[in-house]
Amino acid sequence: MRKSRILATVLAAFLCVVLSSCGGQTESTESETESGTARAVPGMSEVSAAEATTQPAEATEEQASKASQGERNGNSGKEEGANQGDRQEDVQEPVRSDPLESRINAASLHPQKTGNAALDQLVEKIFNQIFTPGMSPYDKVKACYDYLIRTTSYGGGIIDLNEVDAMMGGVTYEKSGDTLIIYMAYRLLTEHVGVCDYYSAAFVVMTRAIGLETYVVGGTVRTKEGGRTGHAWVNMKLGDTYYNFDPQVEDNNTYNNVIRYTYFGKTDAESGTLYEYRDRAADIREFGNFKTVALPAEEENTIR
Image (cartoon, rainbow, N blue to C red; front, top):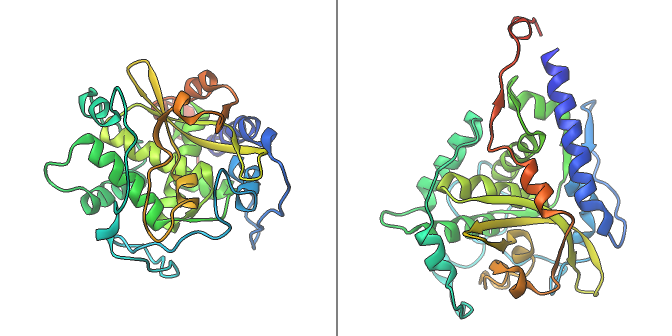
């Protein structure tokens, strides 16, 4: 019975994310298939697969090569790029009347783990690789953003319910969206391949572990052809202002291993017409702070 409850939760989340992302797709692409008998369900990331061919705003058809960073968990197929000393070469930050760096560093931090041991341990391991003593919260956010861009390639996007069930280990989260965030973040951080939802999920898990208030949001993004396609990105709330972070689109626009932070911490006004939200308030309500559901005793004793 517990397994059925978990699968129902994931299916509910699947319906939610499809509604948030598929409406803006401008061209269709063939879905990736998986071998074997596992049940595979296309998630929000698959219906956004047009991003792979209809690249969002100034994106190239082929991603720039990436530098190695830390352990790749067997991801030996990744291209090796320039030295990490070039990370911020020629990068100019936008001038702000209320600097993002100051706002992040002044934020009250409330570190939050997912409650999934495998993912929390993996995030801690990555933090030990990319953080240095004395780093400010802003520098840590930037390090997480850099890590995702330098170690991830665009692809995949199939949600396997058997994998989700196994990863949850019988734990049910109050909000179904949390289950998918945990699953997608873990998949991206272990396989180093993912689509917009996976990049966003991983960034939310990492920045919430730092202690910041971030959410995966959905809607459409402007493409280089001038149309719009389904997309997911991240909102960080600082005070009453939301800032957009989009590591996946940034990755598409990274050249010669130089991250320009074009999609890093921009307000809606600064982003202009790049994004259109499906329903930000609903996406925020769908996040449950990784709170779990206590199952009845009879279900706890059910033999699975």
